[in-house]
Length: 377
Image (tube, rainbow, N blue to C red):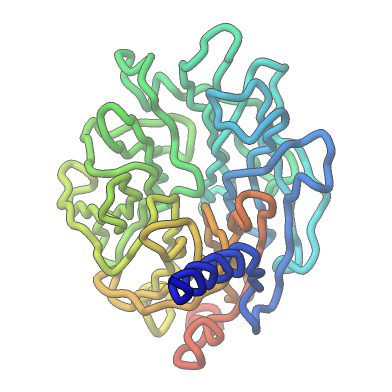
């Protein structure tokens, strides 16, 4: 019996040690900044849902929910605003918090995502809107635009009627947070989730003047990201709320009219929003096609924020490098103007929202490195 008691006490000690363990950002990163932390603002309960892009002039724009009364999601909070910070030096220093969307009390905006139009120079920031006093649980889909690299923003534009069916009025629907994409043809593409019916692609053929959606339901899929492959195939990487603990991938070779779906067992995932972006393409003058992917690399809990690389257009992935072993939630990737990689992610159970940057050489342990593309030399 003594042995049993000692063993049991040992388990308790190990458990307490694990709970009290502190984690550090990986050694060797170039920058690490906690951009949004409610402990520095007594009026805000928490910041959640990070999104980051690199503006046409190279500035970084980091957007996030400012959740005032509680950390509840959109339909549970009467005061959520969209705020940003900007950096002009690859994330070394940042502006103070700037408010982009702030409705009167009772109305909230949540889940920011962005698309950069590299042809016009415009940046589109999408979010989901609700008037909790007048239309509780009714979701509207909005966008604002910046034409000066995120310094100023337009008034909100309600695009719900353009990208959702009228019969979806009472459905639980939302634009995926993070970012959308611009294809080689100039088309803007993004994803929207209808939890009752599936994932849908929406976009614009005229640089954001009007918006459309593809009436094709994609399942299984929750929060998702869309990118264009080198052969113009569209690829969606999806969070799936099942016990499998993996991501799902959907591809279309006919511009979204039909989709092929497959599980991605190598990308383990705890049903959490992730990020996937193109780092480089041969067509743009780089030596290799590269795609980046970040998520909480764990099948059971939101921990172990990891960034991976694919050199074959998403068919296979490197094991990746852990950026932070501790509690890690949503993440958003971007490529900096100097070729470094930036990731903006929820850290330590939403108490911090960290920006970290590092080189491709560091990410790949020296096996690969950034070179200026031929056409830019």
